[in-house]
Image 1 (cartoon, one colour):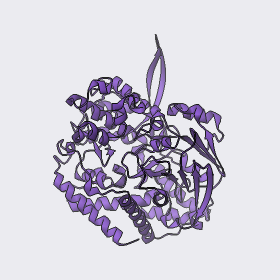
Image 2 (cartoon, rainbow, N blue to C red; image 1 turned 180 degrees about the vertical axis):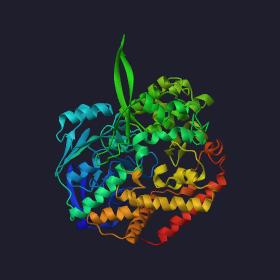
Image 3 (cartoon, one colour; image 1 turned 135 degrees about the horizontal axis):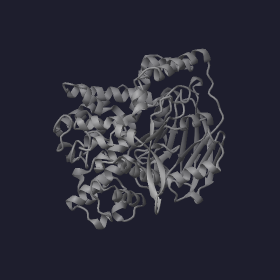
Length: 583
């Protein structure tokens, strides 16, 4: 534990079937979460080898207060991304963070490749590599059911698993965590598949020691009441992030039909309100969270002649509605849910899958690819054919879908059509076309996600846009999120966990840090990320941005590529100044 300046790291070597636990005293200066995960990745990654080489590691990590404060519910995964070829960083909720804490580990490092399809069972000090041949080839949901029925630890375990896309090493394959949560972005599922790891089960019965329970309980209650007795988190409970669909469309910032358009005329039909009225059946929460932001929608599927239907439940949110809704021209809630279900079963990142299919649709329209390539005619709004195409994509049905499974950037380079391939540095874009800060933020962000620095929010918050002010905001937000992610706090709670609250929570849990020390930790983590990205060959000034971003009007109008380049250079200067501090 951090207050003892000991970080317990579980090392699993699949090739040698070797299990080792190391008590690291040198990692405490990184606090936890993304801090220790980045440092461990820096230590173990092999830049000279391809991302899916057996020697490349998978790292899972939690933070100093995981499982003991509200909304501190995330686990970070770090790896060499097969999609972008550089640093991979992804987050998942569910029960995993608490399960790792109860198992007694702050981090897990998995390396090597198993000799046969396997799954890893971590039950406290007992770590086993088990035979997964009976479940190899199964959809993600079936694997989850099988392991729930066959493994111990019901009610306190967490189950991670991949679908067929991960086995086929689709470069944006995801990892399902406890049914409704995911390590979605950047291809962790492909990395697991390359190691012949179908699943990971984590459980234990350890408890977290609290040095001063009275102070801890007081701090816990203050945070809990801020969540439950104010409207600070009500947006996420009520309609969830799906509330943004109509408003982002009205701003002219919702990528629609592969960003041929910037708003969706049918946005009202797939809005958060529409999903709540037509589809919502329940809300769920990650373990240790009182909010309940996971919105479960339901649709009926006919399975026999006559009037025989089954009810199918899937989780939805803004990004899924964008990527499998507006981006594909799908105007019905049931059809969006049906596409989400197929993506879930096959085990792919919904954003990347949607962007890939949108690119394929426009490429077919332009004659860049043919129906022989796509097998079924892909047209915006045709959910039935998209459902089939998702299966083709997950299985690499033919040479076209195998190439598309390498990522949209790769497909655009191979077939042509890179100008309308909606990706930044190889990562398919999230559901925002707000303006300069968003585009620059995706380019310079450590994982090329809107969650790195909230560029979409910066665009909306600056009434009189100033490029230097926007760059400063992006940099400051990236730094602050390094701190929040070192504690692996859910970013929905970023306003709740301001510096004062973070300091109070840490102090109550036995970590008496100062504000200056937190700033130093954030800088240390970001500096480590920047050095690692440079080591892996990344330079944001070399990123080639698709022309579509500069042709379709954003919320700020038509974007000027020279201003984007200038802002990226300004951001790089700030990074160079940080690195010069040699923290």
